[in-house]
Length: 323
Image 1 (cartoon, one colour):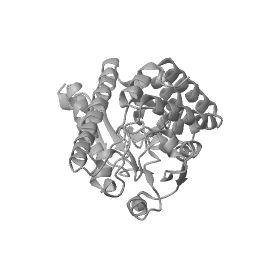
Image 2: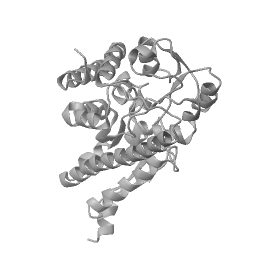
Image 3: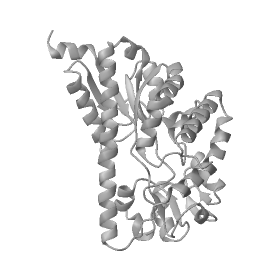
């Protein structure tokens, strides 16, 4: 049987939650190509940009229905179905480094994800992330105490809850209004995105005190597929997919980290910004505050409670929570 004929046997369509021009989508297309290489042409993955077949928050249902075969998406889009998806997708304050989250996935996180997605007809293959978001600020922030009374933009939900609990004054603002609001002094800080994007959009021109690496937000991007189609794959091809996702995750984190580091160096060369890197103690303090808000989310479903328990056990076992 020719390679093409074998590939036809395992041909999958995955939809991304990123648009075609996005650097993350370009990396996802490279992942699809790597799957073909690693499987000697036995698996072909067609990678589609956001909204190609269904809306970004409908991919889970589309995969279960067989309209799509898989997705590469931010897990938080499904928080409306179960609060557990929101909590595992971005436990605000939990991670100081992508490798911590990957280690969590290796040590209980992946099993937990499958407990969450399998009832919806999906199988979780693995996780990636665009990395830690940097924090944009007009004023110096050296730690948790500096958040008190800080007027800041934060998205609704857990991020706002955690910052409010830390004493900040979060407000709702669309991303399109962040720059102007910082410039006019409507806000002093913002949860926005990664350092290199903040820099490219001129955020540091009006907010020269970024916190980098970030301390608050790192989204989990899941790569999952239809469970029946996963179960039908021979074990060696399941292993190829799992390995390809692990390698892709490291490649994505490394590529985006390099972009951030180059942007930091460039911004510092201009002498117009002061980068603030929080100590492990300050990060642990913020995490402790965040845990109080995770607990509230945990009360919303049995699964959310399970995510909370698994996550906090991992963080305690690894010394990431201040006792």
